[in-house]
Structure formats: C-alpha cells, structure tokens
Image (cartoon, rainbow, N blue to C red; front, side, top):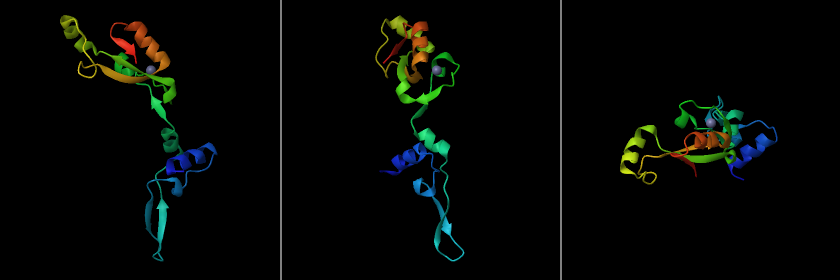
Length: 127
Ligand SMILES: [Zn+2]
C-alpha cells in the first residue's frame, strides 16, 4: 500500500492521520540529539480532500457557483462557448473545435450540467 492508500484506509477506519501517514513530516532534533518527528501538516480534512472531492465549476458558466462539492463520479464535463466568443463564431458560421475555438471545459455536478444544457442548448454540451 502506498501512503495515500494507507491514509484512506486510516480514514475509513476512523483512525487519526498520524505522522507516518503523512508525506510531509517536520522533523528536528531532540535535546539529546536524536532525530525526532515534531509534527506533520496532514489533517483529516486534507485526507478527505484527497478522497476525490471536487467542487462544481458551474459558476464559470452562470457566474454564480452553486458551491456543490462531492465525488467526481457524480460529475460530468461540460463544454461551453464563452459569451464573448459567440458572435464571431456566429459570423463565421462555424464554431470550430475545442480547444482552438476558445470553448471552455468545466466539471460540474449532473444537475448543474442539465441546467446548463437546458438553458444554453446551442452553445453547451455534455461530453
Ligand atoms: Zn453547480
């Protein structure tokens, strides 16, 4: 098991994240000159963050982030065309290909994706 997996299993079992489960260890010397671990910056929150928690990026489309956070398997990637580029694509009658056309990929929660597509069917698509 690598250190990440050990952290995950420690978390799953409700254990503390101890220094031996942390990549970054602040070490120093004791008064008797032996090396010692003084501490480590890993917290349970860090370990949870590592458990594939992703923030919904729908705010890049709507301007107002929904604040949803969750596992990435509940998310989909949406491609949309930023408002400022739409006019030139309309004029060219060709919206081109990502990424050359300026389209943006965002990772959003499924409900947000459906909302985006429902409101912006011509310029957004779920990938
Ligand atoms: Zn969202």
